[in-house]
Length: 229
Image 1 (cartoon, rainbow, N blue to C red):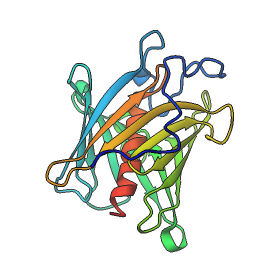
Image 2 (cartoon, helix red, strand yellow; image 1 turned 120 degrees about the vertical axis):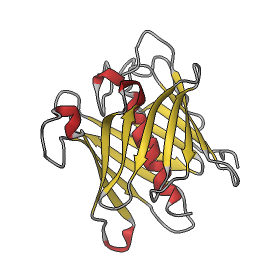
Image 3 (cartoon, one colour; image 1 turned 60 degrees about the horizontal axis):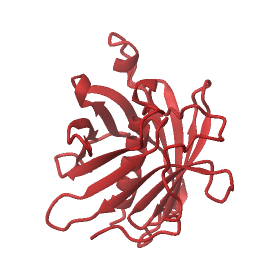
Image 4 (cartoon, one colour; image 1 turned 90 degrees about the vertical axis):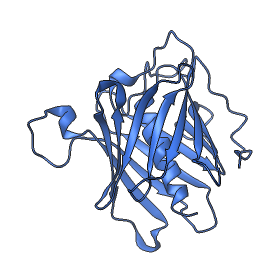
């Protein structure tokens, strides 16, 4: 099945997305993954693979070069939902995504992006790293796959409020909220659901945006939908 139309389709990812904002860049995970502002927007293809974990895993390719850039590893047990690793850096962990205890009825879910301890100092034994962002997902109802993800970036040097709107098979990532006239579309993903082969996601990210952070957000959104199917 291909992506369905969304009321957010009128928004477009632009090469000058951050122009007119107070941000030179948006960093969720790590500065090294911020796309160059002097280059065009970049596209990625995410391929879902069924595996031994509860959710399977994803391979993330640069759409132009077809080179593998990131991959995710899903959980088997525990609160850790998945981690994103940098394939080009010998599968170095980039970000861990943890679930927090859900509210009554499970209508709201909370997650945290945490820096892997190995990325801080390999010899440290702490099980949890620095919190990079907190995420809240509202609207998780059976038979309703439309949801809102609110992401608060907790970096003291670059705090930001990000909203991800899940509408059908389209995920739109905004700086701010789309109801705000100053909102900016940072990234968009469209998902192609396939019955016999793995699902694919086409992700477009504006310059100046942390690509690893956008990958983690969109994978989390896809996982939230996948759990309701």
